[in-house]
Length: 257
Image (tube, rainbow, N blue to C red; front, side, top):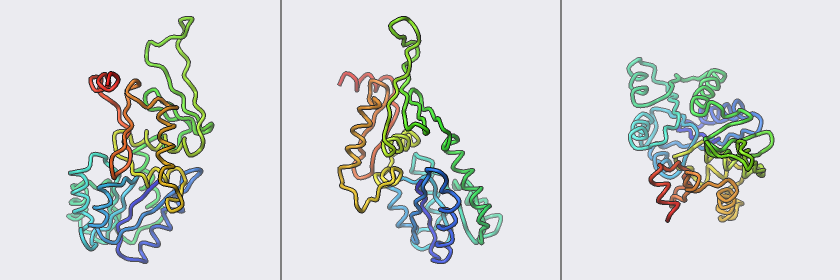
């Protein structure tokens, strides 16, 4: 899980990172907090990278948190949850932030347990079954316990004796499973290379540049992430990967191409 934090006070930032990492690291879920002290710097990163949550202070250099939020909701299709964390307490400020697209607003100084509860609620709204043992996206069903993906047949498909065709089970490595699940959880959006690598537990500093591409190639083949099954998995130059569902007309064009 990747969280972008916009906060220019080093003490507040350290406390915030420590709190989120302690409260949200559960089971096999790891939390990576990426800190920014300048709103314009975060804006540039958001053009090419993806996050599961944004925590934004209001008064920061470069571009104020609320202006960054307004830009994000206007130009970004993927509606990442955003929490405003500010010392501004007036009703007008809270209403303005919510009007620009904030999903929640907390006044500093924050209470750690309350912050954790509000963040978990936002994340659950984005992916209600994020920690469930089984999670299904159309024909693809993910089983956390076995690190397997079941690919179900289309409606009406039958076996050789007329019975409903059983799903195909594909056992994946731990990293392959996490990569595939991250792509499906962000279906239709662009997932940055850094986001994918961190979700799989890699250190980007030590990783050969083609390792991720090799994983993606194998997943595309194993799970049938292609036009025949109504999906497109593409590289978005300079930004990452996008897995998206094809409309019937586009699907037919890609299959015959």
